[in-house]
Image (cartoon, rainbow, N blue to C red; front, side, top):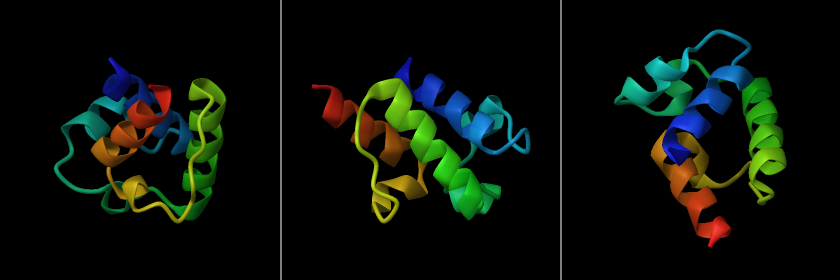
Length: 77
């Protein structure tokens, strides 16, 4: 459930360039999907607002959907 919601936020942050289903099915990292720096800033804002957690732009976990989901899950505990 969390993974799906984060994929929806990635899609929203991409400004319509990506679909949540594509993000979920991808075997590559978010940059390879075309997520640019502006989209990353949007994504961080969306994630911090929705999950009330801290996301660091320099965090290596931002490179993949699963890394971001694990980071969020760790802060929700």
